Length: 469
Image (cartoon, rainbow, N blue to C red; front, side, top):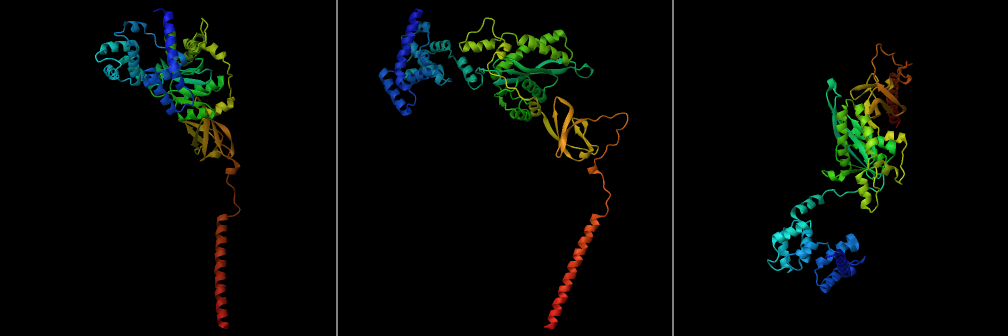
């Protein structure tokens, strides 16, 4: 059959199907009325109501194109009996309705509906044609497994609408005592639309503070974003991180458990890190400073300026032509029409601070991460609030009601003792002129004595009055 004849046949069939369902696709049509019209259309055209529902669904998904029959030319010509293509369509529909249906069950239904004669359609024949059409047992199993996952691909239309984060194991470096090798990690934030790396770094641990560090770097450098999308690792679901992002107006979204496909952009980017690891091994990188320096070079000079297939696929899927040389993450990020939204550095810094409470000991110090920090003797015994940057704990900010906040530094023990600290006047003892306690006792005694005297006088008065009477 010539291609022109095939196209003409598809268009004609689609037109016939559209004429059948035209009365059923009007908006606001009462469900009961639609069901009655469908029953009448089925009787009028000699087809089942199920087939009409299939046509309606196809039209809703792809409009007129969805009504065109699939071109199975070879099957149409070489089918085991005349009209087999229509039988195959019904078999596919039965499989789509209940993917777990076996071939034998489908044949039983087709025979019961008199679509085929008993014995006319054999199991091997139908199984072979279903597999060719993409509805084999293994194919349907994969479909069922994927149905409950977040594997459908997505891409936001503009930068900074969604930012994805992840941590990846990299090489081990001799950073421990006696050259002991320590496992290192790369934490990154990637813009969902442009695949541009907003912030990233190599760290010698994978605690929650490295995640907060890349978020802070990204926001300070590129501004805030609408939402972030991460997995369920403990670093990404910490109360501190969620509270910080909420204070900055950023939505915190999590991927479903075991749904790695939903974070495909980051996973592809992580695979690219493997080439960086190989180069670091060839370079014999020994220190964390070297690892970060070479990682920055890898991102800025290679990754950001390398055409990204994912960006091209996004535009091609939307019918937009892509230059032959492709589009790089840097180009896509910089040419976006949505402006960046920067925040005041002080606001960002405050949002990322951690807050805890401590009791000031008798030496005017507090304990923090196994170190002593000097505060003030005027706060001895007080419960103070400390705020700090988890990546920079050389100083702490101490706050207490009634006094200005101040910076506390780690306690240093020098060669000589420090001068005796001057105790605030408010805490110095005052020489009393008299004992207020004894004076209070005297006042209480005098009041009691007067009360007793009044009682005696009243008794004598009553006796005197009684004698006169």
